[in-house]
Length: 290
Image (cartoon, one colour):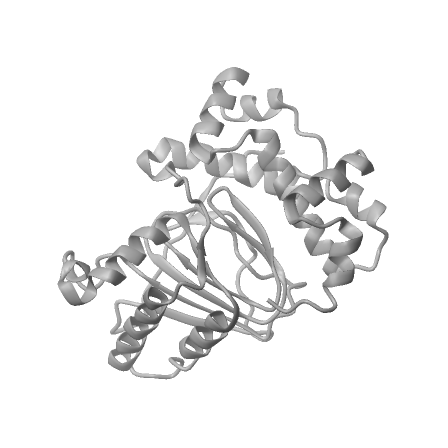
């Protein structure tokens, strides 16, 4: 397989605006989910549906939609695909200095400034807060540029006021320190995204980024806070969680389709990761609303 270069996404604001606001639907689908990063801060609201959530070294599975705040240059994947089943997806993107280099330092905006700094690790919002702010985001569609700007500041204010959120990469995700690191870690993540269904020897991935095996292992742990094996297994487990919701095939088949070769090992890891066995997880999907 040829090396997959990381995608630095080029974002063009709407004419007469410093913001980019777009709603995707069944008729107007978002791009294929690839691993990418951009200097813009991004708000993503997925209205309903289920899917994978990948930001930095964090991976999880969401149900009943998702609301996320993604900081500048935090690598992430697209959150929807043909199987997600959401009614719409709204994204808002703006440069950190879109209102001036010191706007978020003034007393009235300082708390939002701190929120945007936290967002460099990735933030997800939960429950009623997710749906309430999500509806606020969707209500901005069709507004003029000034009204939309005021509305986005109000969205950020609501995000700042709530405690109903989780910071995903609590230890940080430091690839923004050097372009070489961005390129290298994105290549690794894209490779895992495409090849997780088979064994990935350390020799192979180290060779992809032109490093020795010990050097690669130290580097990957330093950047992500995880071993490479742990990272790959977490990717497989999130994929398995998605399949448990979307497909009625046997759990054994899902184990192998997710890249695991040992069913008992898969069961053990899945319970450690989610707190439930795969069969418990599938059964509870019918009743849980998050």
